[in-house]
Image (cartoon, rainbow, N blue to C red; front, side, top):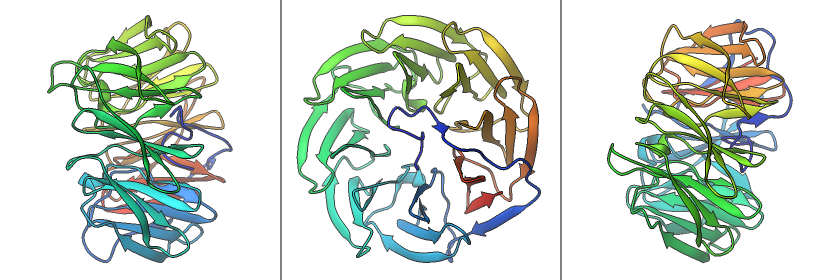
Length: 350
């Protein structure tokens, strides 16, 4: 389990979360002051999270106790890059490189240079790992060996700062140029060649595109809108405008797409038409990148220092829990528990 739930980054996890939350089941804080702004990864009873002290931590999933940690040889920029596990390796971007940590030996098996300020989250599909670069490119790497398969510089010359999304044959990324404009770009998964590029307004890479069926859903940051694009051509199917900047990744499940932004409203739209089904004003509007998660017909999201749960169809609040710190990350839902990064800690609710 990892950020976005799947390679298409729909944010739709299998299973269900807790019906009620009154307190945290456990909380983990590093021994030295450090912050986290990433969604953890879970594999085989272990939770993996990185903090901005350049360390990756492996925690016992049941109790939150540290099992081991490893330094990745360079600061994980603002601990934004979300980790992922595949092929017995833990992947994360830090210090300008994509690292693969061996889960058996806890040693770094290989590292591949991205660029000095890379913040993208790696995604592994089959035998390849894909990473965006802040200098405006995408790199495909053999996940087991670290051998570079291809590296492309996007034609639009814009930065890729968030996670990429992957389908059977395409890699889809959001880009930006300063605070002015951005694109959603689809690349051929085998070669890195550009399939299509669609203008998406300022800061298209406030979060990864979410792909469901034949549609790409992309928030456009300072463009203040959610766009639905045709996966095959990049043509716009519909557009929904809001009154504030939209960072993060939308979540899509059961015909509904959910997203929020600086304007402090969580929206739920019909994924086919873009018509609003419901919306709810947040008491503590997010001040940075925030992405909802969907599991078992419930939407989970952090806003300010509060974690919320709403029903997907009606927008009825199930529960809310006040976190010890600001919640920066998309919740991860597994086996009746919600896991979130709260600035200086990882917290398990359930």
